[in-house]
Structures are given as structure tokens and as C-alpha cells.
Length: 97
Image 1 (tube, helix red, strand yellow):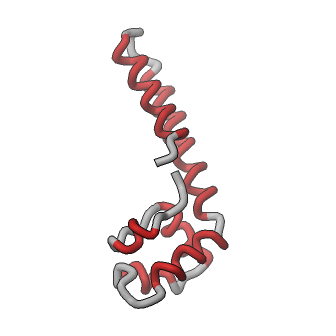
Image 2 (cartoon, helix red, strand yellow):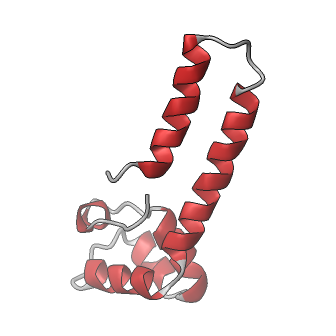
């Protein structure tokens, strides 16, 4: 969860950390609008994300959504399917890629 890869940026994808970094570095908005297509955009965007708290904010938000999902899923009748949904929610938070 977290760090934007160069591949994401090269594809023009603005992931959560990038969007949060825009709050601290408004000049990133122009890079997003042009889908990081100018020379140096990808490297500059990665630097801005690393300098910002975008990864931490994205992680926090994902944790909140996953915890809420688990709370709601837990209301279902116990079953292997319910347990699998809970496990899937937890995996999302701990996966590397």
C-alpha cells in the first residue's frame, strides 16, 4: 500500500499517495493533468510523495476502510465465506504488492 511505483506514474496513474502529496505540493496537479508525460515528471512526483506524508495518509485511510469493512462483515452469520472476507480485508493491509 503505499509508495507509487515508477510504472504507475509512467502509466499516468495518480495513486492515493500522489493525491495526498498534492495537498503539500500543489504543482503536482499540473503533472497529474498531463499524466506525468513531461520529462522529469515521474521523478519529481516520486520525490514529492517521499517528502510528503501521502503514504502515511493513504495507509491510515486504507486501515480505516478495512476496519469498517471487517466490522460490517462480522455482522454476517458465521461461515467460511464470512471468514474468507475478513481474511481478505486483512491481507489487503499487509500485502507488499
